Amino acid sequence: MKLLVTFSRKGGHEPVIARTVKETGVLINVERAHIDSHAGEVLIDVPAESAETVCRSMVGAGANVKVLEDAVVRDENECIDCGACISVCPQDVFFLDENWHLQLHVERCVLCGKCVVACPHNALSILE
Ligand code: SF4
Ligand code: SF4
Image (tube, rainbow, N blue to C red; front, side):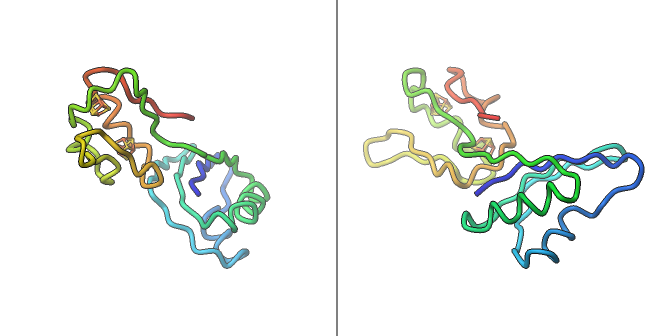
């Protein structure tokens, strides 16, 4: 399950990820991170059965946590199965099936947004 974790670094900061791994014993897969001197935004992937425990620990460390049920979403009425999104996706989310229709492995998405920009029919969006 994907969780978007945001936290402030003003006035010193807790090492949110490290603290949570130590406290919960859950191995956290960091898929994307942007951290500067003021704040951090980290996309993590954790086993679904551990998500609640991880959320509780991170909130306890002062972070905000948002559960991302879906990542990229395709509007089937707009998609023309052109395949332009396939080559730009770093996670191999998209593929064409035997009927040349676009299919998605949504669980692989790391919300980079590259496919949203590349789609010529504005068929893709990201739920946040
Ligand atoms: S947002 Fe990024 S990772 Fe997700 S499907 Fe689009 S290109 Fe792939
Ligand atoms: S780029 Fe857009 S229109 Fe083309 S296959 Fe992907 S989602 Fe469909």
